[in-house]
Length: 417
Image (cartoon, rainbow, N blue to C red; front, side, top):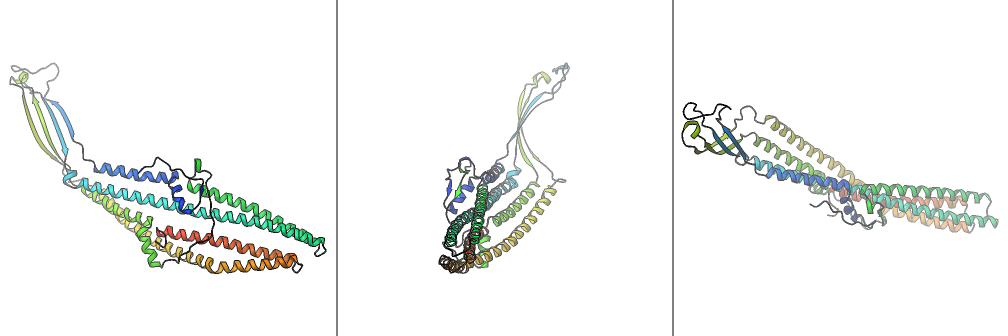
C-alpha cells in the first residue's frame, strides 16, 4: 500500500462524497495507515525461516612456552572444529506456523483499525461540512433580514412623511435594522468558526488550507429508516469498530496458540568438521573427521507458563470487549434510528407546513402595512416569525442530513445499502 504520494485535491468540495479523498490525505489518517505497514513488517518477520549458526573452535592447544612434541612432551593433539547448527523446532512443533497466523491476523486488525479511524474522521468531517453549509445559509438569511429591514425602514419613513405614522416608528424601524445588522455580523463569525473547524477535521495543509464546502442543505432523498434488527445485522457485518473487536479476539487466540507452541522444546541438528593436527603433537599424521549431533532443551522448569497465562487472560479480555462493543453498538444504533426518524418526520411534514404558513402571514402583513392597515410592531413580529421559521427549516435540513450520515457511520454502510 503506497502512502507517500498525496493526490491533487480541489479547493472546493462540491459533494460530501468527495470528503473521503481529503480525509485519506489528512496527516492523522496517514499516520494511522502506518500501522498497517508496521503489522505487515511483523508478519514478514514471523514468516522468516530461522538462520543457521556457525561455531569455529580451536582446542587442545599447548600453553605458550611449552610446545608439544612426539618424544618428550606429547599432548593434544590440537584440533580445529567447524560446526553448523540449524534449529528445527520452529518447523517441527508448529511454532513458525503459529507465529505466521498471528502475524496475518495482526495485519487484519491493523487494516480494520485504519478503516475505523478513517470512517471516524470522515464522520467528523461530514458533521463539520453540514455545520458550514448551515452557517452559510444563516449568513444569507441574516443578510436578507438586513435588506428587508432596510426596506421596512424606508417604507416607514415615507409613511411618516405622509402623516400615516408617528416619528417614533422610524426610530423603531432603525433599531430593528441595527439589531439585524448585529445578527448578520455574528452569523459571519459563526460561519468562519465552522469553516475553521471543518478545515481542521480534514487536516487541510498547503494547497488545501483554504478548502471550502459548497452546495446546499436541501434534502433530495430521505429514505425511511431500517428496522432495528436489520440495522443491527448491518452494523455487525460492516461497522469497523465491531470488525476491529472481532479481529482482535481472533488475534488474541492466535497469540495464545503461539505462546503454547513456544513451550515446546528447542531442537537443533548439528553437523561438524574436525581437523586434528597430530604430526607434531604425537607423531601421527594429521587427519580430518566429521561429526553430527542433536541438541534438545528439556522444558522441565520454564514451560512459558507466564506468557500462556497472560495469553488466556488476553483472550478473555478480548471476548468481553467484543461483547461490550456489541452492547454499545446496539444502544448507539437505537438512538441513531430514533434521531433520524424524528428528523425525517420534521422535515417532510411539520417543517414544510410551518414555513409555508409563516411566509404567507409575512407577505399579507407587509402588504397591509404598506397600505396603512397594520402597525410597525405587527410587521416586525410577522417578519421575525417568518425568519424563525426559515432558521428552523435550515436547522431541520442540516439535522436530517447529519442524522442520516450518523446512521451510516454507526451501521458501517449506507442505507439503503
